[in-house]
Length: 330
Image (cartoon, rainbow, N blue to C red; front, side, top):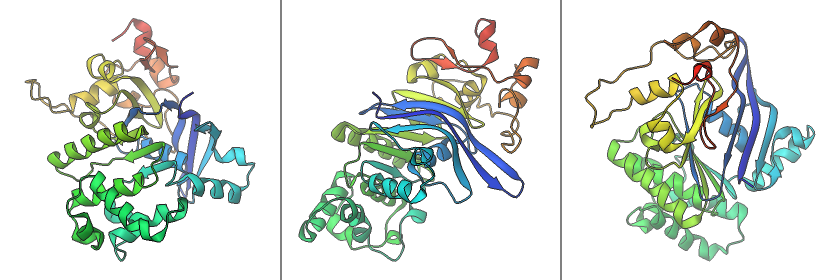
């Protein structure tokens, strides 16, 4: 059984303009000790799908339907029979404990008026019965674990006194404090330079090996997941349009959107110029009846506009939702 299994998850947001259908029936699974990537451009629904799992949607958001099975227990809001207090109480017991999230903007997540130590030991106080005398030592160990030098000194500092890379490492340390079974990393390398990006990804890989946690890596950049993920889900317009092993996605992409993303990745071994994807993402208040990529696809057919293709399994590990595959592949 998978550590996390999502089936037909649908999430929407109420706005003055109408209901935004941010996540439209996605299914995915993550095993313990595995790093899985969810890739898509901004607005594709990748982050909101994981906020749905964490129970961190904004007030106007709700999970409409679907199953979220984590560590053998159903945690979708609807399985609490509308009892929001019971749902939130349970989610508070696992958030930051067995299920943690690394947020993409450390300066928004970290409290500017609290020291790093106070923020680092908070999940330990909430979920672990650790004597006060041992909390400081545990905080030192966590900063050491994520590669922050002079941890004793850093614990006394405030977020604005640290570099962007160090703040991101602090976020990772907070997520790891209670040794979670599952870690969701939401754009953990955003706004960091390339060298720090590589270090953060290597750190996540090393920690996965040490702790055995399952990891979901959310990103808009296929280059970030190239060496880290065993499997990749490509998400667009609130739907998963392709999934496969990393090699299948990089060397045999079948969906035009996946191919477009790869054409945007800088490859020093290729002389091809970077090719941006033309057009804009679909309006999820009134999403297309068919494939969400239809208006940006140079190979679109009439049927693409009318009907959303079902997933076609190309192998045990590789699946794609594209009408072009019904013609024998692309």
